[in-house]
Image (cartoon, rainbow, N blue to C red; front, side, top):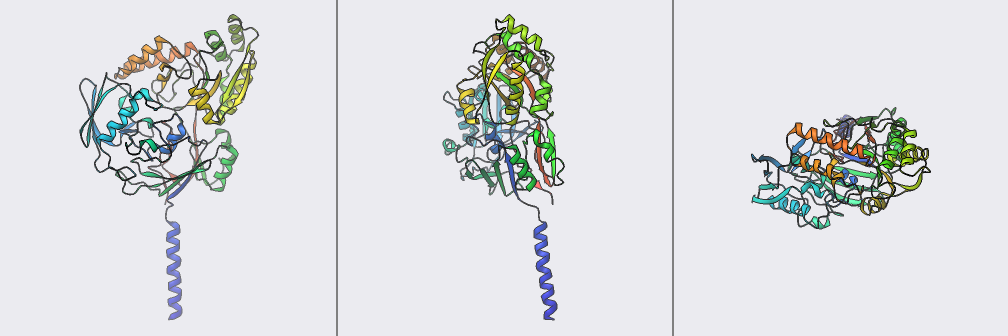
Length: 492
């Protein structure tokens, strides 16, 4: 009898162990190319900040869903006045920040007033320019009055730059972010990884993951090795050029989707000789989009002729405005008094689309007499030298923020482009809610940018993700920069 009891006991232990082993995983290691400079999405332009924090740590009144739709978030509902100027938001009850402080309407007022203040550090301050007043009606109700109707207001409130923060922790969010989201910050090993853990008593739908580590792997070869070994289980923004090395791995799947990433050869429109329209047009004619797409995105990018994603319903195909025509480019340079070309610099940030694309662009411009000195820069250097100080001639970057054609109307933006006609179109667009009229205005805006050859419009960045075949819930598309983990789980 003792012998059989021993066998049964051993079987029970084995069964328990087997059941535990079969239970779905609750941890995830996710790879990222770029490390964020800090973790406060209300005080920095880098997309990597939002790739960690959006929907995970921080939440807004609304949020953008995986297909670009506007969804309720901290605001469970809202009403809009007949004149389109007053938005009254009803907030969820019982919401707390990660430090235990209560969330209420006063936090919304603080966040929106802070974002639109004169001394605001918000990289997308323009999102809040239409706000006239923010009023606390009661702890769960806030009323936002606009200076004029704004058709995109609810969408704007879903950007990562519009998340709600608390006055108690706002000044320290760069290193120790405190939000209301389903994950809270645990630790950050600079240069290596950052870890989030599941929030206790989250107000909304519970998440499946208990722990998520974001591991920073800028080298594509290292990313391939990490995915094939299983050290990293997901790489939502994988190098397209490295896809052939992982596509046949039986435990991995490659998922290709759309982004909002207009990939451009930016030009400093105030710097000679790029301040001449004919010179910028010559640059545009020199670009062979197919060669650039093949070399910089493994042929997966979609060509663009202005600043809008081809997946957008209001996109206008203007790729025919400047077809690849080196002879035409040389003729324009001659008309501009630059028959012998000129020398300039090309500053390239770390992503493959920039470094690989930059080599191709430099070769194409060399054919028409423009000799580019390639200067690789780290992301922090790019933000400082190019984006902030405008110390550059050419650069390559992908603008991943959604529906951001208005950046060309912003005073002192790094393109140094100023066109009153374009600004007038954007001003009218901001006042327009009618979809048909908005489509017409967006078409005009795209045409002006193409005609002015403000930048060299190259391609829409593809969203190439690689992750474990048992992993579910990661976004296929990228309507906003995000690694939203709220629905991510391992299949049972």
